[in-house]
Image (cartoon, rainbow, N blue to C red; front, side, top):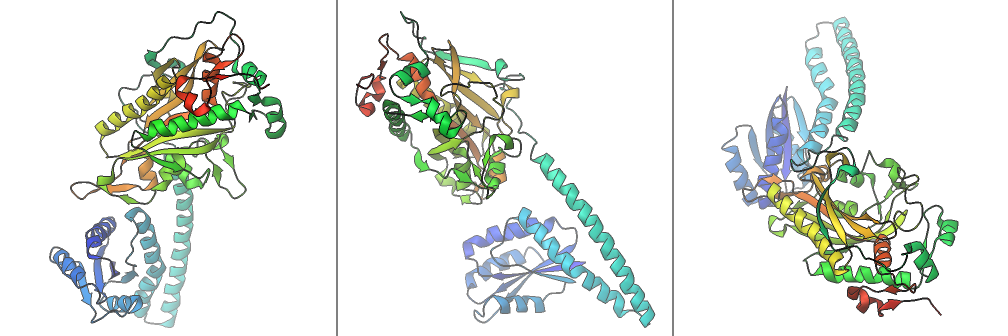
Length: 487
């Protein structure tokens, strides 16, 4: 079986090398012989010269020139008239990537396959009886093929589901361990405050100062619902603004992202299918995000980036929603674990080099450490063990802040790198110095979440008289040095 692939050329000259590489990649995956027929519609003289250089190296290429631009369909017709293959496959000039194009090409081949074979055998039939016998056998073969294809489709669906659950390979520096209890402490900063009085929880302090209403929050929003009030709102917004100013100096581009996304972007970032139960789903089968990492990664999906623009650095803000389905009985009171919160997220796309990913990963995590130090809150940083890594994560750090009311550290930030796990799924690429298409590496790190950060601020800065001393870095944004009860 020989295939003739007809491609009208209405691409600009500088896209032809990429077009040719894609076609070669597609056709090299087919075991049958083929020919590529490029039809110049008369508007791309320089493109034709480029193609001739390919034709000189590949005898399977034909070039058809029209005297002037007749349009797409006449170009197809001219190509088909010069085709010598048993099967002609017309393709438009705006070709998709090989993984997406090959199934469509195969479908086109199958559509015409029966007609090609049947006509060949029917032409040699010596009687009407033999002709009917050939048609009957072809019908049986077609039915059998359709049955096998149907079974193959089911197998492929199961295979794809399994492949989507294959995790990334952890870095050799990742500690061994089954869960977060085996994470490895890397460093500590600051000393927990020593109080001359019995410290209170953030719930008691905030409710007394009119900053928080959990009772009405639960009445309206259900379990884990909350209202921030008065200075609680002011303090939260002060943290947001400080984050804009602090991280903005690091060279990030600001984004405010959608909070509702399509399923494919959660698949692409590795949150689906395994985290389905922790996501809120709309009646339109879209999802509420648990982090702006998802829409930021979707921002460049299907695009080819310019190498000179790497790394791409985004500081993204969004509301976030998590059902906390696996957290029954954990942190049932207060602001540590809630269904709805707000978060600034750092997201980076960099060159496809491991050393670059390691460097950027350290930088992202250090950014958040510096922000916490600016607030003067004690913390420690841990390297997550293998059992505490997400599906696509190669390595992850958690920053945990000291919470005085619990006399322990609680997570405030995670910084991870993925190599090309996410960019392959989302088809984000760039061309390297040699002109080869590469998938960039992706990384992300929490910049700061609210209201969770308020827990550490309030519990670490509480005063004996029940007031809260405002961290010095936040005073210009809050507008006062002490938060006290509203009179």
